[in-house]
Length: 111
Image 1 (cartoon, rainbow, N blue to C red):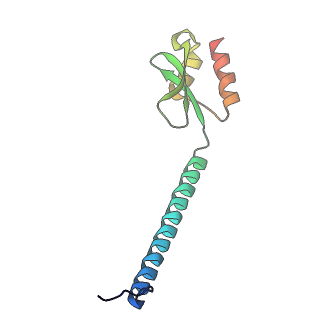
Image 2 (image 1 turned 135 degrees about the vertical axis):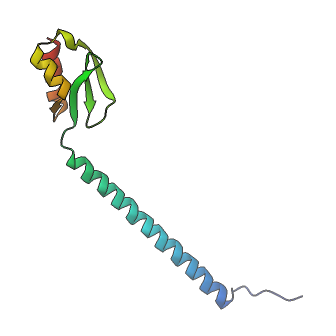
């Protein structure tokens, strides 16, 4: 019966080192790709300086976040009850930069 050595053969050591190197390199590349995607998302968000849009949806005043078409808030304010200039502004969308400004506009529209 042939006895195995407690130490791996040099070829095994070389293969283990190469495998470990490949894992470390791929892990680093994955981290770089993730960081680049995150940086790209931040640049896109910064390029869109309009965090809120107040608009008319199906005859009701709604608040949307950014360029999303899905309302973040649906009010009880019917657009038909507003002055014509407010109705026109809501059709094109009222863009506001802060949540405080959005709440002020919504309060003004609700009377």
